[in-house]
Structures are given as C-alpha cells and as structure tokens.
Image (tube, rainbow, N blue to C red; front, side, top):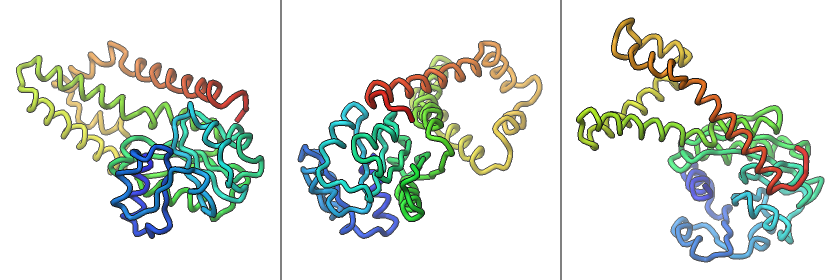
Length: 262
C-alpha cells in the first residue's frame, strides 16, 4: 500500500525530494530506491520535520511503532491506514493533541483504482484534511465519513470487498470449465465481463438494481440464473458475510488497540 501511494503521488507530479519511506528491514526498501525518494531504516529519523506521517503497518504492530516515535510532534498529521486501530488508541500512543486522520483503502490502490474512506479528528486543520485527501486520491478515489465508527462498515464493504468479487469470479470460471470451456477462455470471459459490469455500474446514472433489471429478459437465460441465486439466498449470504467482516473489524480494535473507545 505504501508503494502504491508513493507511485501515485509521483505520477501526480509530487516532488520526490519531499517523500521519504522508512522500514527497519533494509530489503523492504529496495523497490523504493529507483523512485529517487529518500529511504530510512530509522522511523524517528524519517519523520523528523515531516508535515505528514503515514502509518502503513499491520494492526498487530501499530502500538509498538507509534510509541517508539521519538520525534513525532502533535502538530504533524498522523495519517493511519492500520486496519481496526481507532483514533483514541493512536492519540493515547502519541499525544492527545495529535492531528490524526484514520483511513481505510483497499488493494486496487496498487493499480491506482483504490477506494478509500477517511475520518479526521478535531485536531486537524483544513490544510491537513486537504492533504490527507490528496495523498489517498493518488491511489484512486477517496471520500470522508461523518463518524469514525463507519470505518468498520467501510472495511467490511470496500476494504475486504475485492476478495468477494474475486470469489465470484473464481466460481464463474470454475462453472464455465464445468460446462466445457477451456480455463483460459472461461477466465477471459469472466474477467472482461466483471470489468465491463463494474464500468457500467460506475458510469451509469442508474442504480445497480435498475441495470440488473435492464439486462434481464423475462424467461431468458439471465432470469434463470438470477432465480437460482435469489432462491439460494445469495443476497442474504452477502449481507451476512459483510456483517461478519464488520464484527471482525470491531474485534481488531479491541485486540490491538487496547480498550480505547472511538
């Protein structure tokens, strides 16, 4: 995710001299060196004097990383993409006056097609809010939520969402092979169909339910397939799966963020 943000910023014309990346393991920095940015193995050295500090770590290690920052100042923007770690925990580990934006991107950011949701605490000024959005838009689209608790739902819908579509694609490819198609043909048909459907849904002014109805002729093949999906409770399964993801996001905050309430 860090790499996708850096590459996106550079493509948007951001000065590489104003970007640095830190990782205690030097081998993790190798792919960044051709980008002409500065790299460090010491986090505290990297964040000294920075306007924005992006916390791009696994939630399991977020507390250890933040509490070991020796040069973090309250006026610096701490932009966290650590899943499930709430702002109360981040403030406890840094400073109660810390300017913090918490965000949830997803993996299509690696291709510049990500979707991110953001929430800022009251310590952030207008410029910092704009900067946070600018950074996340380097990897795709970005929007703000009104309440931090909504980020758990964002995690369930878009953060984990790509995997749901991958499972559907996988199932369609397997079904095509079962019907006699070559795997390569089934995959090509499925992936282009998924891409086209997503593009139609994104570009159209119609809701997905209207688009579905538009391509479903009564008594036709599409209607036959959708009838099976509905009778076998596909909508309910999706709703239950997303609810489970939402609950797991809440659990992550408790497991790795301590007992801090958002």
